[in-house]
Each structure stands twice: as C-alpha cells, then as structure tokens.
Length: 242
Image (tube, rainbow, N blue to C red; front, top):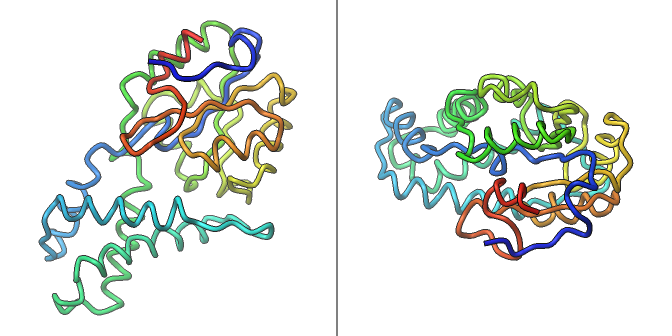
C-alpha cells in the first residue's frame, strides 16, 4: 500500500535515479554465506548469531556513520570501513577465544570484504527487472548514485541490468559519497538534466532523502526491510502506479 505522494505526477520527471544496495539488489543469503566462509576457516558459529551481529554492526557502522565536510571516499577508505565492520563482527563472535590472532582476524575480515563485493552473492529484488524495463520503456532515463565498492558496475553487468543505467555514479570512483549533496550534483552534471527533472529512489533517510533534497532533487524512500520506517513504497511496482 502506497504511503507517499510525489510533488508532481511521475510522467513530469524525465529521469529516475536509484541507490543500488538494498534498493535494487541485496545479498539474500548473507548469514549463510558468512557462516560457510568462517566455517571454512575453522570458526564455527550459529547462523542466527551471525545475522544478529551483522545487523548490529550495520546499524552501528553504516547508519551511524559520521560524515564531515572533508570526508574523502576512495577504494581504500571503502575497504577500510567494511574491513573494520567485519572485524567488529568477528570480535563479537569471540574469534579470539579460538586462538585467532589479530592478524588472522584481519585476514578473515579482508576476505569477507572481497567476498561481499563480488557479483555472486548478490540478487536483484524480485520486482527490479520488471520495473526498470517498464520505466525505460516509458522513456525515462535511468541512473544510479550509490555508495559502493568499485565493483558495482561489474555486479550490475553480472545481473544483466547495467545497460539500463546512465550515468552510474559510484562513490569510490568519483571521490564523493552520500550524504554529500555534491555526488548528486555530479550526477546531474553527467546526465544533463536539471534537478527538478529527476526523481531519486533509495532506502536511507539521510543518504537517499535528505542528501538529494539538498541538490534540489525529489526523492522517494523504498522500504525493503521491516526496520525501515516512515513513508515510502515497498516495491518499485508501486512507483509505476504513481
């Protein structure tokens, strides 16, 4: 059931830009994948406990992440951020009690980063392929503005949807990351559209609602998970009805 209304009819926008992770795609078996990976290294832990800590770490590190005006995004900073998040999970899983050294925990954390930035674990949400094809068929220019590792384009290509999107603005490629509104201004510059011609869709209140608004872009929240609150849509199919 839709709980939003756009400031103008959908057909009055010329372009629709999207966030990527948790908007277009997800890792549906993240707990099982992490459990198998850790088990292969000799660390055997309950899958549900891994899931609890993954969500705890994501809330603490990602949703609670502080951004200053001088924050610079690079492939190295992205890797460092996620490696630290995985290190937190492993520490909370008491890897040290298995006689894992800090060095081994670090190696495992880097391995998880490589695993979770490769194409294979990802899956499109079930509504995505249908909805983006329909939107493109209606004549909308589609684009992506995402905080992501440099592997994003290869993941989208692996999932068969990269060709729908131009521009694809990836934080680690352009040195800017949401919620800095500058990344949205760069996307506008690359697309050739004015801010009032673009609608943005994402799942994060600060990154995907507040930040595009600072660049003059209307935005819609998509609520993929139970912990997402506020007004928004639950499926891109609802967007087609706006």
